[in-house]
Image (tube, rainbow, N blue to C red; front, side, top):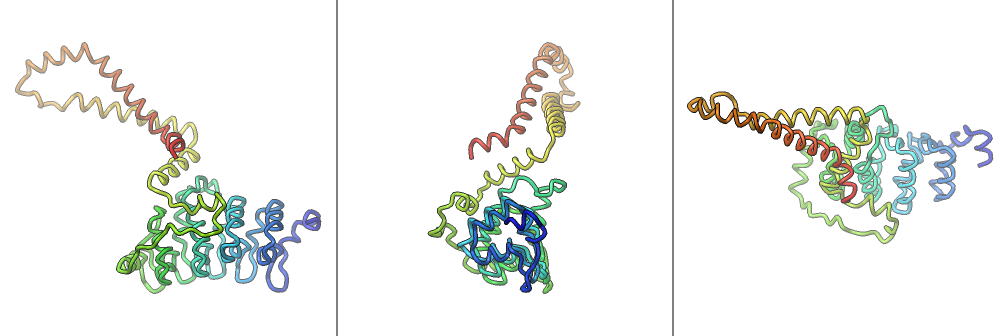
Length: 307
C-alpha cells in the first residue's frame, strides 16, 4: 500500500501472467485488501488483464463467496459494468457463461434500481438499454446466451425484470431474441424464483436479489426523472401541464358550436347564467389542474414513502 501511495501507477502494472495487484487480490480471496485498494483508486477494478478481463469480471465469476464484494465494487465504481473482454463480453455475459446465477441476479437487481447514470452526460435509460442489450463477438445478447444454454431461471429473470430488452435483436446466426423467447415458452417456465441461499444474510444482497414489482419499477423511473431534471425544467413542465389541463376542462364545459343549434333561446339564457358562474368555474378548473400537476410532481416522493 505504501508503494501505491508513492507510485500510484504501480498498482496498474501487470505481472507476466497478465494480472494486476487487484486481480491477484480478488483471485486469492483477499477481500480486505481489495476494499483498501478500491478506496485508494476505484478505477483499479477496471484494469484489463489477460483476455481483457478486469478484476470486476473476476469478482463476478468467482461464485457466491464474492457476492458481498460484488455489491461493494458496484457501489464504489458503477462504471465498471460497461467494461468488456476481448470477446466483447460484459459482466452479465460472463455471469451466465460461468453459471453464476447469484451474481447475475445481483447485477440485474442493481440495474433495475439504478437511479443515476454513472456518466452524467448520458440518459439513464440509454445506459440501461446499452448494458442489457450489449452484443458479444457473436452478436449474442444476454437473452441469447440464457436461451441457448437453457438457463430458464435467467431467462425468466430477464423477461420479468421490466428492463428495456430488445427482443428483436439478432445474433450472428440470424436468430432473434423474440424467436428464442417463443421457443423457451414451449418449455416449462415454472421456475421457483424464491429459493434462498444459506449465505444470503447480507441485507444489501437480499435487496438486490428481491424481485422488483411494477410499482417498484415506477418508483425507480420516477426517482430517475427527479434526479435528472433541473428545477427549471420541472417548473416548466408544471406550467405546461396546468395550461393543458385547464384547456381540456374548459373545452369539456363548452361543447362545440351546433350542439344547441335548435335551442338558440335556451343557449342565450345559459350563456347569461355562465357569465355569472364563469369566474367560479375557471377558478375551480385552475385549482384542480394545479393540484393534479402538483400530484404528478410529488409522485416520486409519495412512492418513496410507500415503498
